[in-house]
Each structure stands twice: as structure tokens, then as C-alpha cells.
Amino acid sequence: MSVTDSPAATAGHRTGRWIDDWRPEDPEFWEAGGRQVARRNLTWSILAEHLGFSVWLFWSVSAAMLAKMGFDFSVSQLFLLVAVPNLVGSLLRLPYTFAVPRFGGRNWTVVSALLLLVPTLLFAVAVQHPSTPYWAFVLISATAGVGGGNFASSMANINFFFPAKRKGLALGLNAAGGNIGVAVLQLGLPIVVGGAGLFGLVTASTGGIHLERAGYLYAGLAVVAAVMAFFLMDNLSSARSNARDVAAVVKHRHTWVMALLYIGTFGSFIGYSAALPLLIKLEFYVPTPLPAGTGINFAYYAFLGALVGSVTRPLGGWLADRYGGARVTLVTFGAMILGTLGVLATLAQLTPNPTQDPTIATHNTGMFPWFLVAFLFVFAATGIGNGSTFRMIPVIWKHDTRQASGVIGIASAVGAVGGFLIPLAFGAPWIDDPVQAVRTSLVAFTLFYVLCLAVTWAVYVRRASVARVAGLAEARI
Image 1 (tube, rainbow, N blue to C red):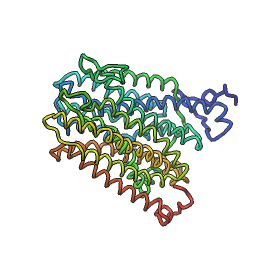
Image 2: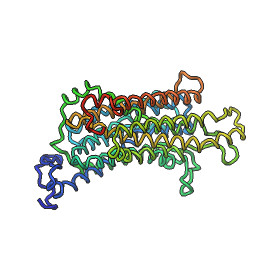
Image 3: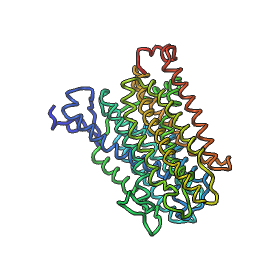
Image 4: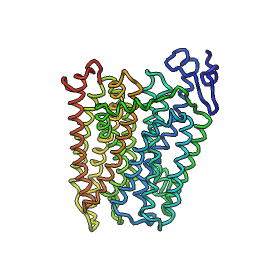
């Protein structure tokens, strides 16, 4: 087969760009055109997933700006708006995983991209009316969860396109492209709506904030992603999954151990990404005019967490390949414990400032660099842990790739629940003082990371671990 006679051109097609002959493990097939088809599908899959993540975390920034649009919501209410999309997104990940073999990867990418019109357009309309009730905002934020499901379907689709030896890089790029969508949103949304400048290149609007602009922008981008997927992506008839395989892994204890560890890594990444803008505003924002250098605008810094966590994810996979996923995950949780304790230490140095005293405000602002460095350390660890835990799954289930796919779907769904629990805990309505709620939550998260570290060591790392006793000793998990 020549390069011009690509698999997409020569394989039997059905209506809707179906490829019936797909053999990525065949070197001749791969080099004769399969590589180009796979890369083309990966490119547009990354775009669709990138937008999905952006819409999923839409409220992470928007909630912090609602007050300037005339909405008077409490801290607990705002954190709930941030948390709800993460819960819905986690619940959608399993059905989205099965949508690819049921409808085709290209077809479902089109549908999932168009579904992003629902949360973006509803958002654009609602924020223009200060009379919109809080319950309506909760429902609208829930619809943003469709963006969270995109990760599962996108990863499942790309997994079928690449040979085993190339799946790590392809899936890593696909995942990182989606994760970076959070950072792009958190940096770009305040600029688009006129709420912040960009390092002197762009200045904040003097005409007020217009959140609806972001809704319309991402609705337009979703249409672009759907159109590109429709014309440039393919369905694979060989993409199949068996519900019985998934039912089998549900009964496997390692499935739930990995789900627990993924709550600690990815759940922390998505939860902290969602909560960081509000967290910075709650702890460091100064609402009244004070001397220059006091008060922190979250719009300039909140995106850094998601960016660092996204960039370090491929690094986690590389380290896991070199040293073993379990060992890297163990070190990761140790780093997350230290980083979270660092965040707590900086928050403990802040002084309550109910009267907006300039001296106190300056002191608190001076603690922000330490807070940011500690939190970025945590984000870096979550990214590495995301890569290392994902690498562990195919090694544990190396003799059954279909079951491994099922475990990835379950772990990604359960892990995303952490994205709901973290903002919910930060905004805990059962604690009167919002600042104290944040500190209490960080203590609880630290204890959870200690549990994850202990489980990783007991089950996968120590000489007499459960994994080794079960016959997995020869595999460097």
C-alpha cells in the first residue's frame, strides 16, 4: 500500500466516514497511511476535548465575577456553582465512554461538541439578567458537566487509533490538550469579558464586565469543533467494547483501589483548578481602594495552577515508565502532603482584616507569593500523579486490554468526583467562617493524601504487597 493509498481511502467505508479495515499494529499498514489518519483524528480530538474542559470549568472563573454583574450570592453558594459541573461531569464519563463504540468516535465528537452549546448559551442569557434566581444558575452550571464527559469519550476514541507502543504519547497529548483548556479559560475569560488586562498588552475594560461574551465565544468555538470533526475525523468499526468486561472489573478490588488513588490525583487537580479563583479572591482580595501593592486580582494568577498540572502530566507518565507507576505515585502523594501543609502554613499567617486596614492588607498580600508557590507545588504533584496512576492500570490488567479500558473509564469517572468534593468543602455552609472552612478542608485533604500514600505502599510498593502476592511481582507497576 502506498502512502497516497491511505487506509482511510482504501478501507471499506460506510456512510458517515466509517473505516472498516483498521490495523494499527501492522507496521506496513501504519507506515503506508495509518499514521497520518491517526494523527489527523488526534488533532481534532484534542481541540474538542480542550473546549470540553474549558466549558466544564467555565464557572471556576465566572462565579468569582458574578458580584460585578449585580448578583449577590454567598461564598457557599458560589463554591456550589463551581462544584456542581464536576459532579455531573463525573457521572457522565461512563456513558460517554460507551458512546464511542455505540455511535462511532467521529459521530460522538460532533454530538458532544454541539452539546456544549447548551451550557454556553444558557450562561450568556442568564448573566445578562440580574433577576435570574440562584436555582436557575445551579441548573445552568449543572449543564456544564457535559464538558467533563468529553475526556472519557475522547480518550476511548483515540485509544483505538494508535498501536500499543504509541498509545502512551497519543493519550498523553490528548489528555494534556484537554487539561490545558482549564488554564486557557482561566487566563482568557477575564480578558474577554473586560475584567482584567494581560501584562500590559491588553487593559481591563472601563465599561464594566460582560460575562455573556465568554458564553457566545465558546458557543462559536464549539460549532467550529463540531464542523471540523464532521469533515475531518473518522469512525472505526473495529472500536468495540463488551459490557461484560466492564461488569467483571467492577468486582475486582484493584479497580476501586485505582479509583481511590485517582480521586487523590485527578480529583485534586480538577477540584483545586475549579476552586482556586474563588479561593484567591476569598483570602487575598481587597474590595476597597488601598495603596498600590495591596490586594490580589485572581485573574492574573489562577490559571497557573491548571497550567502547571497539565504540563507535568506527561512527565508523570515518563517517570512511571522509567521507575514504575506505583513508586512515582507514592512519591507524588508525599509531595502533595508537603505542599498542602505549605498552603496551610501560609494561610495561618494571614490576619483577619474586617476594617480594611492598609497595614494588615499589605501584610496579607505579602504572604501571597508563598501561598502561590506552595499551591503550584501541589498542582505539579497532581499532574505527575495523573500520569503515573494512568500508567499503572494497563500494567495491572496487561493480559486483558478490554478490561483495562473499562477500569480507565471507571477510575476517571470516580476520580472526577474529587472535583465536586473539594469546592463543596471549601464553601462548607456548615462552618460559619468561610476562611476557617478553607483551612479545615485542607487539613482533611492532607489526611486523605496520607491514606492514599499508605494504600499505594501497602498494595503496590512494599515487598509483601497485595499486588506481588497476587502474582504481579514481575510487572513493575
